[in-house]
Image (cartoon, rainbow, N blue to C red; front, side):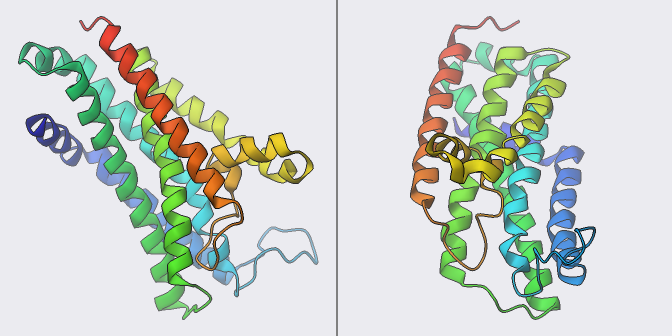
Length: 253
């Protein structure tokens, strides 16, 4: 297993796409914090006040729920496409590694990439707001609790779901399909608008990170956060089990 992990991380860290994606996530986090601080209600209806300089970090962290799943999905698609096209999976099986080891080595690597993207995004946003604009409207402990739950949700839908889909697809349309699914999941933002109208919509919205847009911040712990955590962990376990079961049964050419 350790050899597989070393090989998977070596493949990840030698990829220029990983570093390009990392730079994009970091720039997006820092740029969004700066933009919202300097122009808090840019392009908003007249006389509307949604974002102010006092609550900018109440909005920026949640936008990672849109950016990071895309970044993680793109990374998963890139790694899987390379592995299947170059026969890496088949060679690992011939070398004596089990399918379970191969599956979890990919899962750990892709999840780690999502964690790195997420941390860099949040660190850039926090640094710009706090060290450049002297923003002090944050509470470190609630921030760590909130962002930890958001990270679990992002990994589930960015890395785990993409890995499962990628092992099902295995073809030229792999990347396009995975990113199309992520785009479709972004439509769950709409659920966040109507979640107060129905308990069912509220529970569904809590499953998706995109449905929790504006809930997570550096200043407070969102109400009902434990439900989001439980649902996301349960879904992660289910997706992992389904993905592993399929990977054990599928043909590898």
